[in-house]
Length: 201
Image (tube, rainbow, N blue to C red; front, side, top):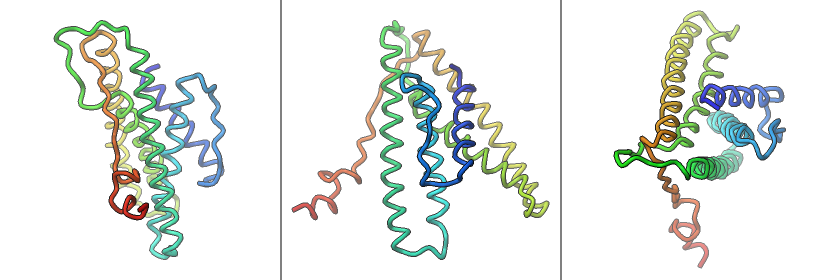
């Protein structure tokens, strides 16, 4: 599957979310668990829910207790996002484990999975910028500004898709190799965050 197919699955997830437009709604992943498409749909659903949580928490009238509750949900969502990206990295490691890497091969600045993560977020930006560019209640100046931003986002999408496809092709040809570093986030770890491990004792 090419990156265009990834993007189509992300758009499907975003459209499915907006049927109910609720962070409480559980996703009905249309793909079998064994399919790579299942991971892509799940990945974008996490991003889509978090996108809307980030909107909610910025309400200037939000109750502070509610804001703290949402902040903790966002933290948990960030961890799920990271875990899933690393799982997708594992998928590609397994898929390309038998590729003969050339002696001249180089490593990329990011893995396929983290590039896919950026594409998922970009799909959300395009969806919501298009909403603003076509919002009936907005004035024409707002629509024009959003349309200009949408054009930039679509150009970014074309460039990112091309880069992802090229990275995959380079890995398949042995010109690049995969090397994965775990994120090793410290702030969620009770043994590494001083605030957390002090409260344990």
